[in-house]
Image (cartoon, rainbow, N blue to C red; front, side):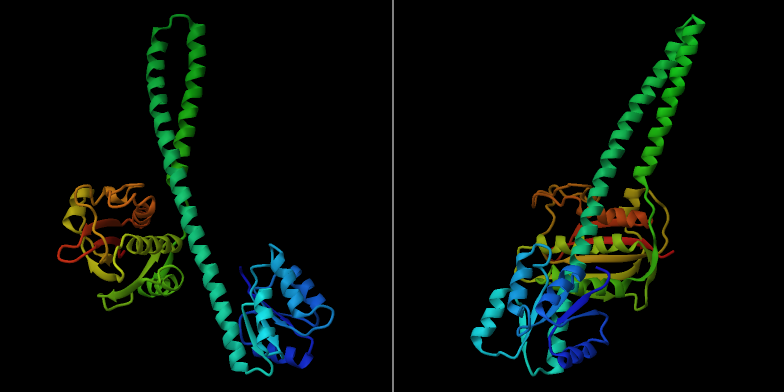
Length: 377
């Protein structure tokens, strides 16, 4: 949703004007209605994010308007705050039964009204952001699955086609009739064309255009933590520690970075059997650890930003654990049903930035650590 709208349905012009002025400094678009019938018309045409609804209005009262929109699949999700001169408990209950989520009595305090509006809008914006992150997360999983399936199919197809071309060459050498040779030459050219198409398809599935932007890593992670704790991981206590003592700005793919943070926090939350769940996210400058250097067979020892996610939950099962394989799709250490596509998305993020991943069980403490190494240059 690009623009959040608030509908003020109030038949008293002075009150409508006061509320409009009060909200003029907010980023929301304000829509007005002077009676119940116009309120319904504006609701269906404008689809506001929040409705401030007076109960006593001509043509249709606020209770009737609320009941009608709550019966409609397209509008039943819109939160309604009643503005009412009626403060009797029975009237308040009637408003809640109709589908209202809050009410404020006339005469109202401007500070109180603004606080109630902001409270509902903050919830709505947080929910929309949560849906956006989840949508990006699942889209990335589907793309990765599709890409890996496509790569596997094209790889096998290409292997078989290579064998066909080799044997076809032997067949051509055994032919005597010129007409047969010419015919097989044409067939060979078609096979070569098919081989070229497969290579193009493999290139397409193995690479996609990414946009990278300068991101202050500490600020970005802090922002995502604050949001995700409110919306997804209320049980997690997360400490962000910047051991570099400096601002770290790197060109990163924002969506992939968000998905990686989300996935690592989700793993820390799910693979945890304790009541108190703690995660430390530590930023530091580092060389690559020896096990990664040996695994990747590289001699480069440049500086990296290390982002370590350290939890105090369940450890990886040592019998099945492999620091490289754990980042492959659907790998399981048998401590649960498996980690699905999650850590492979983290690995994909690191590799798309020419970085690396690492994982291990904490030695003297509970839990495990997952590390991302992103080159500084």
